[in-house]
Image (cartoon, rainbow, N blue to C red; front, side, top):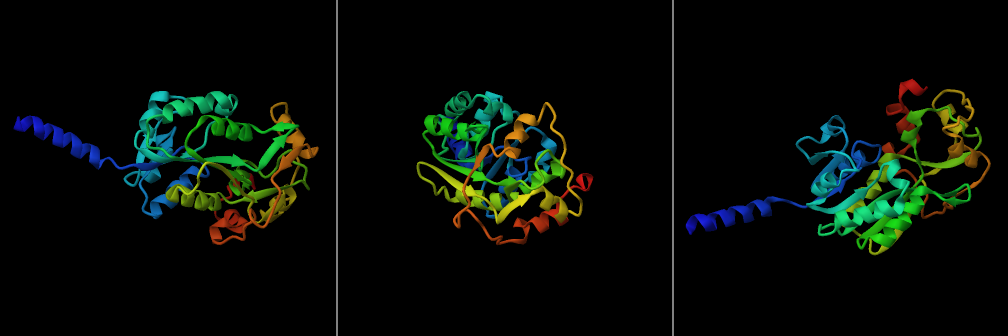
Amino acid sequence: MILYFARINKARNNTMKKKHYTLILGAGGNVGGKIAEELLERGAHVAVVGRSRSRLQQFEGRATLFEGDFDDDAFLKQALAYASSLFLTVPDNALLTPAATAARLKNLLAGTAVKFILNISNCITRKGGVATRLVAFEEALNASLPQHLLHLRCANFFENLNWGLHTPYHPDLKLPYISAYEIAHVAASHLQKQDTKGKQVQVLLGERDYSMAELAAAAGVRYQQLPYTPENEAFYRPFNEGNFEVETRTSHNTSAPSHEKFTLEYFLEHELSAAVV
């Protein structure tokens, strides 16, 4: 009898030792990893998810690591088991079927302690006359999930310039840009405080809009507009023809950088890949 109770108490103690954490999907990406770092600096309990262990090495010994694929239900269920809040970003293929992806997440979240979800989205709301995939996904999540949801509609990331400074964008087309560090700062605060009720949207447009000609010049090169390809024409042509809608810039969604890392100058000096210049 004493041994029996000892086993029960041991099981209870092991359960109590399990601490709830904020789960960060896509922790190997531009934003997810920065959110995880900011939360860890704030003393939060964090778990990170990524497809490659090597992309998660920076969190060894500081966070709970989950290596696996978003499409694996058993894997995601395990990662969500002790989550109390969630940073949500999904792969492109999951956005092709927003309602199905939202329904899948609803099933995976059932029975967990997750009460608050921060979903990363984009400030481009319509393109080619239809809602963008990210906005369609927002709507599907709102319809499916009972949790409190905050959608961050963000400007383009400075960090995306590492894909290339020369694109099919028209040289003078201006779009909002923002640092992933600034997004991470805002997101980490919301995830830690869980301060959103219901379903809400917050727009983050950074300090100003930039054209590709301006961004290339700031990096010290002359911008070269590339021709469309069969693979990218559907993406770029609506922008060049003005067939898109972007969140209106206001004093509430425009930010004066409060930290050096939030500036274009910091990105160009410290993080722009030499391969694209």
